[in-house]
Length: 412
Image 1: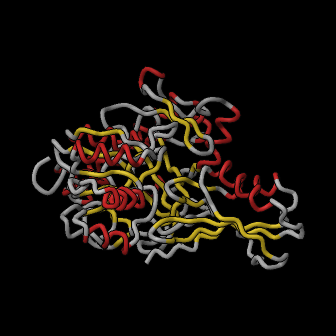
Image 2: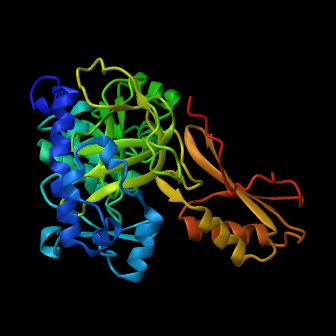
Image 3: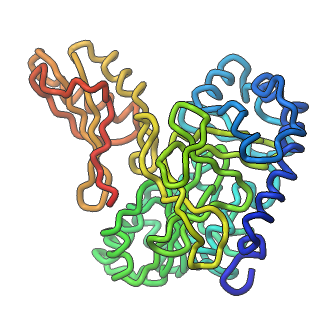
């Protein structure tokens, strides 16, 4: 961890990297099938010894979160997809879905240290971590990465902004980790309260898009912010090293871009679904379809790292949408409609306002309001855990395009 790179793995040739990954892959698959009943079923008929190339890997079935959810419902708690005993993973989390997930082995089980290093974090930094430590692994992903890097972590979590500002003014952390929007909340509230939060000069964000205007605002305030792409099942898959240069894939993953709804890789540059294979032996993931869209950036990164680069997050392959760091699923909109029979049709619209995500539920109904809108707003908050506006429209107003969640945020 000296100089510009975390280690020599980041600058090895692509041929060396591919040879190393596909030397390790057969052992991972054999281990998963031998120690986890779910993987044994999912990979039935697969000979691990043949998995020595990307073309061979592409013949394996993609597994997606709905299948994991179904398996866990049939065989709780893990659906047969964990290849270790509780002593090997220490913590169990409950991610949206709900999906139970073990932590995995090692000091940095989600591979966050490499991304933090690329964002400028170094040994001895104090990190103000605002990802949630409640139920999900969110807060722990970069917490473990920062401590593995040699940083101290203040586990701020979400909310209690006034107390967080007090902590920042006294602890003087140099780094921020959390969602892109919440850093602005802290900086703005700090200015309003006359509290010194200028110690924060760098940030690594995830859980939402870092819009160019917000990045520029942070830069004007003396904070250099990078973003990473992470999922609860695997950890930090890719990370930024320089603005507008894409996200470098983490060294512990095999990443493919496939045509949505299939397992077929697409040509470099074509947008498709991110599919990832990770080498965590406790919680192996073999061709996990993330549901997120991206594309491969051609050429080598100017930063000197030689791994594949992604264009970043380009939307969802389905309508499941991340809002303020939380996923909202079409099934949740359906549940709102079920609870309010007066609703004939509904559409959740996601937008940006004042550099923050906002959402509003437009619904068709012949019923007079008489408190219906307020009741729907309460249900919306209860189901999604997020606040949103509610708007009644005349029947026939909403588009007939099958969408129940419309992401109208601009990413350019």
